[in-house]
Amino acid sequence: MKKWLAAFVWMVLFASGCSDRKAGRHVFSVEPDSVEVADTAIADENGGGELIDEEPMPVAADELFDDFVFNFAANRKLQFERIVFPLLVNSGEKKEYIERSKWKMENFFMKQDYYTLIFDSPEQMELLNDTALNEAVVEKIFLDDHFVRQYHFNRKNGRWMLVEIRNQTMPRNPNAQFLTFYERFVGDSVFQRESLNSQIQFVGPDPEDDFALMEGVITPDFWDAFRPDLPKGMLYNIVYGQQNPAAVEKIFVIRGIANGLEMELTFRLHHGHWKLMKMTT
Image: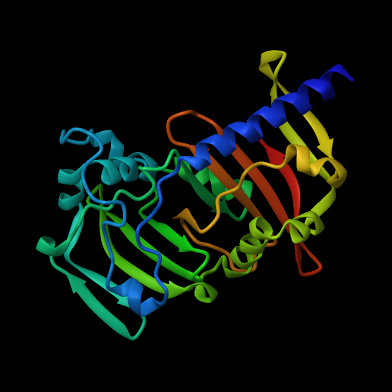
C-alpha cells in the first residue's frame, strides 16, 4: 500500500512537471497549410541564430548521429559546413535547390526543452549507439497539416552531411497509421480512454530509493490521475536505419534535452486498433 501511494504521488507530480515544461515550449512560426506552402519555407522556422559558441565540433561527435545532430542544430558555422550545397529539396514531382546564400539556420528542437522519437521495437532503439550507422533522417511532423518534412543525412568519409530535404504528405510516411492515431489520441479524451489497455504496465524510479525501480499496473479508471501532458501539433522524430510500415508496436519517447527526464509510451496494434500497453519513466 505504501508503494502504491508513493507511486501515485510521484506520477501526479511528474505529470504536473511535464505540463509546466510543455507550456513554455517554443511556438514554431511556420505551420504549412499545404505542401506547396511548406516548399517555400524550408529553414529557419525557429528564428535562426546559433545556440552555442562557434567552436570546432569534437571529432568524436561524428561517431554517433545523436552527438552530431545536437552540434549541427546549435552551431551555425558547423551547420553551414555540413550541408551539401546546392541542397536538393524533393517534393515528389517538384524539385528545387537551396543555394548556400539562401540557407537560414535550422535549430530543429533545440529551442524546446524536449524532443520526441518513434521506434518500432526495443531493438531499433539500440541503433542510437550504433557507430556503424551511415544514414539518418530528422523528421518534422506537422500533425495538424498531415505533412512531414524529412532532413536526410549521410556520413561520408566519417563526416555527417545533410544531403537532401524531402517533403511528403503524412499518408506517405511509414508511421502514417500510428501518427493518425496519435493525433486523435492526444486531441480526443474519449478516444484516448478507449485506446487504453485494460491494464497499463508502469515502470519508473522508486521515490523511496534512488537506485531502485518500481513496477505496477495502471487501470483506465485511474488514467486521469496518471495521464502525462503529451505534445500536440508538431513532433520530431529521428529515423535510425529502416522503418517498418507493418510494425505492430510503436514506442513513443519524450526525452528532455537538459533536464534528463524521459518517458516511453508503448503502443501495440490489436485487431486494427492501437492500445497503450506500457508507460516507462
